[in-house]
Structures are given as structure tokens and as C-alpha cells.
Length: 234
Image (cartoon, rainbow, N blue to C red; front, top):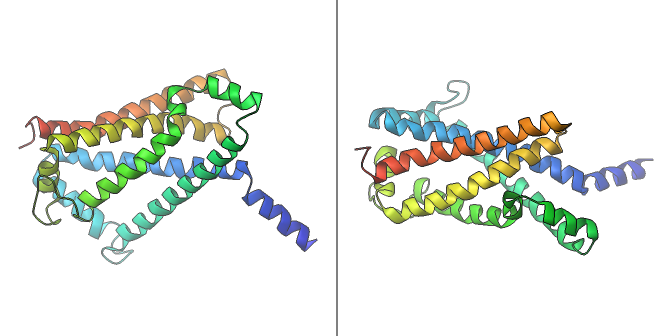
């Protein structure tokens, strides 16, 4: 009996259904992270003091005194990193399953019926991973410093310095276009996997919400660097 139970659990953990559910849940966590990050970036329009205060609060004071100063950001990073690893792992496994069954009529028909966002989803995910590494090397570790040479203690001037360089903005623009294609299709797929796509009305609502959040994230992330590039943020 115990052996049978372990076998069932093992099969469940390796099933495509479980992987899709894990992708859906981790994807929604990552979308929530993007919205929070977007909100923080928009503080660039309020000024240096507000932007730097937000960055300091996020890194040191959030959930203090429930947690010691500086602990939250590392717990938060660990959670986001775990979600990202699980998301990428499940995507790779599902991709392998898809490639294995590509010869069937069902898979061919499904491929023809996919939207543009769906078709570029997997390659877009790889692109996102590379651009995310670039983003971390610039704004988190300070390994790459185009447009700024000072330390990481002044996030406001890091932001201004980086996005005053045209090619940094161009890379960021590509990054956000791919992100928003990913969010549009990912939002739809996540709620469909979790059982929300139950009929024509639900399908319309999910589609509208998917486009809304993708557009919101794109505009919210692009406005601050674009304003810096054209000199609207001093």
C-alpha cells in the first residue's frame, strides 16, 4: 500500500498537469512582482529623495521590526529566485514533452491555432532570462555601469545615468516588449490552467485582463526610462 502511494505521488510530481499548475502559480507571483517593481520605478517622477527613500525602505526597513533590518529583501529575492527556477524548469520540461509529441495531428493543429504571443513564448522566455541577467548585473550588483560610475548607494542617479545612454534604453525596450508578450499569454494561460476559463464570458474577461495588465506593465516600466532619455527627469 505504501509503495503504491509513493508511486502515485511520484507520477503526480512528474505529470504535465502539476508542471502547468506550478508554472501558473509561479507566473502569477512574478507578475505581482513586476507590478510592485513598476510602482517603485514610477517614484522617479517624484524626485531623488522619494525614489531613494523607497529603495532604502525596500532593502532595509520593510517588515521591520518583525524582521531584522535588511532581512526582508533577501527573503524576497530568495522567493522570486525560487519561483523563477521552478517556472523555467517546468517550462523546459513541458517544452520537451511538446517536442516529443510534435508529430501528432493534435499538436500540429494546436501549433497552427496559437497566438503570436504563444508562439514566441518559449524563445521569449530564454530572451528574458538573458536580459534579466543583464539587468541584475547593472542595477543589483553594479558589475556593468553604463552612464554611471558611482556606487549603488544612490539608486536615483544610477537610474538617470543608465537610461541617459540610448542603447541601454533600446535593450530595455526590447526587454519590456518581450516581457509584455510573455505576461499577456502567461496571464491567460495561468488562469486557464487554474480553471477560471469556464465559458465564453470568462474567456472574454480573461483576455481583456491579460491585455490590460500587459499594457499597464509596458507603459509603467517604459515611461520612467523614456522620460530620462528625453530629459524630462533632471
